[in-house]
Length: 127
Image 1 (cartoon, rainbow, N blue to C red):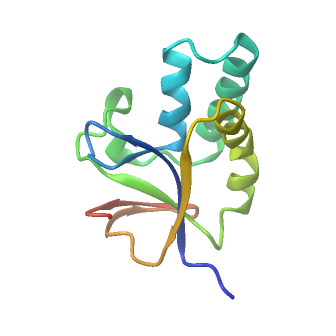
Image 2 (tube, one colour; image 1 turned 30 degrees about the horizontal axis):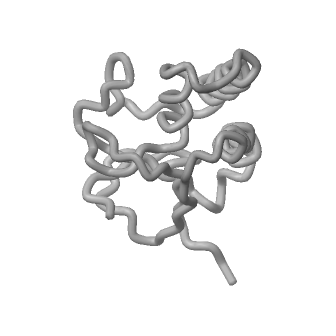
């Protein structure tokens, strides 16, 4: 069976801007911000986040300070993001370690695509 075209790792908390579930990065960042993670786990988050900043194109809709004024949501492309998913595993492991609920969602229908690169799409009107 072939996987759907897109996947998203998301929390069960709602993002203020998008009114959609927060993605895996924000879900982890909130624990860093709130002092939940140990110093060692903060380092894991920071190193993983930096790897993505260095290796994954950043959609222009995020704007300054990751404010995402347009309220778009990103999804990984399942057919080209195996390396990205391998590198995101430490963030999933942190969520599991701290018993933070999350879902891995697959879909062929993610909404109106407003951004696309080799690994991800940015969309509006996703459900």
